[in-house]
Amino acid sequence: MAKERIVVKIGSSSLTNEQGEIDHKKLEDHVHAIAALRENNHEVVLVSSGAVAAGFKRLGYSSRPVTIKGKQAAAAVGQSLLIQTYLDKFHEYDVTAALILLTRSDFSNRERYRNAFATLSELLDRGILPIINENDTVSIDELTFGDNDMLSALVSGFVHADRLIILTDINGIYDGNPRTNPDAKKFDYLDTVDDEMFHAVDSNGSKVGTGGMKSKLLAARTALSLGVPVFIGQGEGKNKLLNVLSGKGNGTYISNKKLTWVNTNKQWIGLHSESSGKVYVDQGAEEAILYHGSSLLSPGVFKVQGLFEEGDVVEVLSKNGLLGKGQVKCSSSELNKSIELRREEGATRIPAIEVIHRDQWVVVKKIGEVIE
Image (cartoon, rainbow, N blue to C red):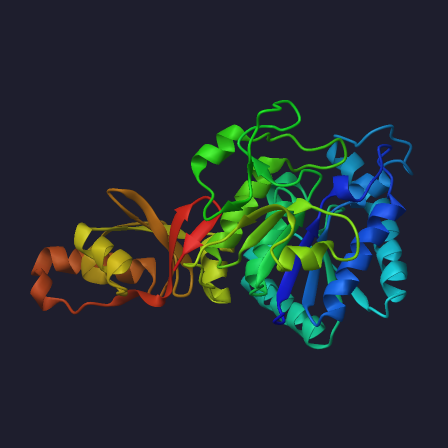
């Protein structure tokens, strides 16, 4: 079996008991399976939920808190409990683990994005197991990933993983809710995640988690757009993750032959950067950048909205709506001046300037999905 770089996401429901506390038997089972992957020479990044679920009982809550301060306090208590348990269990397999807490701003800020990538790369190069969670202690709704399903998808693209494995308490994707519909049909293999699937599945999470199957489908769609195949399902025992790699996993495989990795800079532009303005293009420019791999030049731009400088990211729109995002090579004032001169003196007398180079351009298809 060829060496793979694998991101494994474990949800709260797969880590805790009915009382919302860490279930040591479940956790040991996951640790055992991850250790087996590493014994087979695979690189592993673990994205683990469970901090809030592990901590709220210690605060005296009878169930998962719903207030921000309650969630953050529970995370503050639970994160240390969770990581210490992981460290102790992985130590039994001579595996050194490292905790990385991320917020959405760590991805949207380009310098912090690069630093996070450098840190993860160094850990993997040195044989360390990164354990990643959202920093729930300080995160607020506007700065969150939504849930760790999406975080795992973004991380899988970030590290150019060969596979994303999302472990949950349901053995795959169905065309309905198998808990309430006995006739729901399971999908063993999918080559895409279409909009119809979102209408068929349950969006509710468990008592101790935040994500339902809809969040897992959105995560799968995002990972696929970044070139990473996905498995969603469950399993038990040391070989459960190895079984996923060999095609014998208890769940749903989502992949197709057209998957290609998106480079890290384009991921940042398409999924994480904040837009400083908008650029409106004509039909000729739309066809050039969408279908011919061309850079965006000033003659194709007829309107600019917002203020931006060289190096900023802008949205590119046409009469058909949003086309994508790109990092500009000129300021909004330079581009507006070029547009005005072309209108006053004629197109043939004003030299074209490069607005967005093709290497700094990303097509945005849907929310959480990009293509080059």
